[in-house]
Length: 91
Image 1: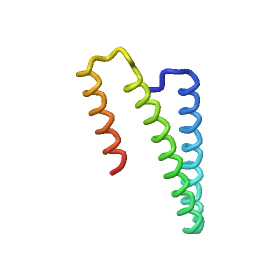
Image 2: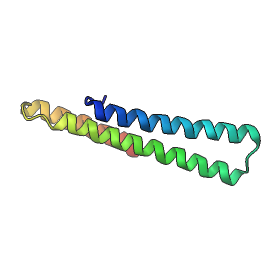
Image 3: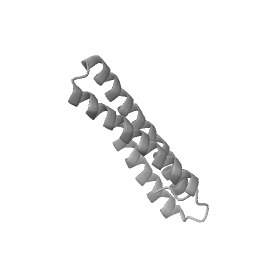
């Protein structure tokens, strides 16, 4: 979860944009919009979701690994957790 107010606002703005794109996609499906336009809209939604994931992942990595007062064991555990997250994101 983003800790700073600015990060949280930025994440919510991205989510609201994605919601608007999905709503437009739904309207297009209901109205019989051409497949080319629908596929383009789906690609836009996918790109927006990837952008959100990327930005949130960056925030998470900074939060997890940017704390200087961690023990070596805590650092290893956090690096392993972040590596696992990155692996699941890249699947």
